[in-house]
Image (cartoon, rainbow, N blue to C red; front, side):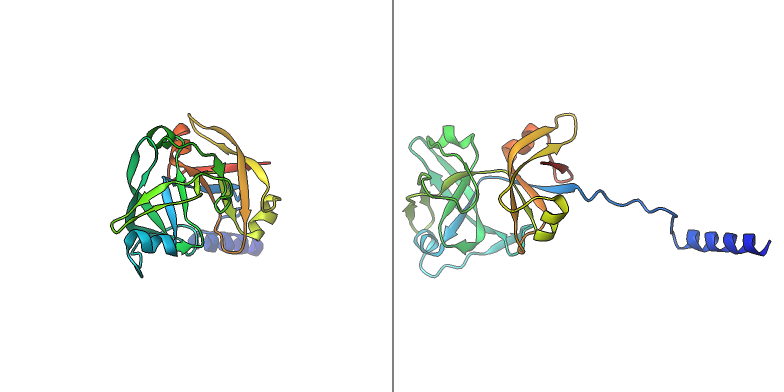
Length: 216
């Protein structure tokens, strides 16, 4: 009887502490999604041309990736056929200006580019940028952002992938499906998150609560 009483006592203590015999663990293979719209990363030189010498950008809000933030400042991007106003600048400044647009923007701008990873700008077209103090004609830097997953080296080991590997992702839901050609970007300065643009998100009804599965 004493053994039974001891077992019952332990069970009661567990219930009081909200401990269950088998805890439900979060599926570690669910990856959060970040959805991006068209935006610009500016070099210091181009920032000075567009906003004035020595101009400092004003932070609007922090982004999910460490050290990245949206700025209050916007510019206009101009192509042969038209322009798009109020395109958000993301900070901090970079060594080269990079303009990330949506495929649907081709029709408005009259400029055609291709999916590229951030920083892979060689051979890409340029674009005209107009700010409050001046304008800049870039020689290159216009891209559509390739789908990618940010992760740490530890995440890469857990998913059994490596930096630069191209994988597929599965999105669940009534309009869900599979996106191929998703690049893995693994480094110590990243947080786990899959980045797609707003057109890709709308096609599969993705929102801030959506999580995806990595498929190798």
